[in-house]
Length: 154
Length: 139
Image 1 (tube, each protein chain N blue to C red):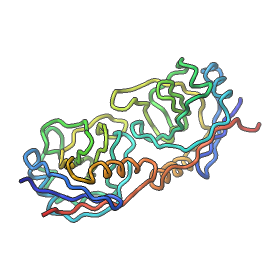
Image 2: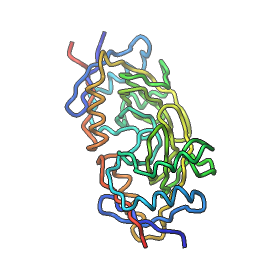
Image 3: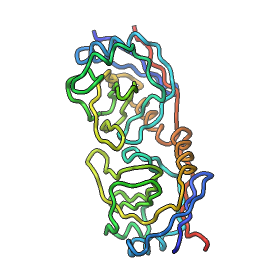
Image 4: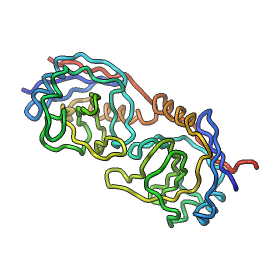
């Protein structure tokens, strides 16, 4: 079974499945830094998506390994659009972000347009808190920043 | 020139109405004033916040005048398609979600520096929605 993580946002926890077949090195790196806790806030260019406010401390040698489809991105599925429950990793210009979409999203690097991202994990839709978690995510748009915790689920 | 007074949270600023460039839309805006509600920060358009309007003179005007897609800092833009009145505090773009770009009507331009407004908008992103109001400024 693929490795599982638990994500807790504002007291609501859900599980997600790491997408190890698509991005084994990125998933392994993320797993290695867990547990990871910080603040998240809603994005302003990419739609129904929120992001980490501080750089995620992925190992330094991770992103330099990947040049295609763009620097730092391991997933070659050319993913820019995001669906509800996608957990993505973005590397750009020295920034490491983990973002979660709770409805339709399309990753954009500011006014410059869309960018490729790595699909890191997907929320498990059969988890009893799945819907409540997405509702909690959506509230970030009007409530402001909240604390998130990523943990290993072993 | 007539001016619009915009208040977001604790920051008040003035914008010059662009009556010559967008006469019908500015007239509809003036009929719609005063406006107040909870500001929402854009999810798709970048550094801009907006008020959703549902039943104002602006909503009854489908035409886009003085059209704009790239919203420079300080621009006040009405989107007939979205029914949203935007204030940009840095370079922003008018998007209809993932479907693509839109044109809106540039109604007014904030006079001078928008840095205090930008700080308040960022505080809104971090701390949650803030009250937003528009009224015709005293001369």
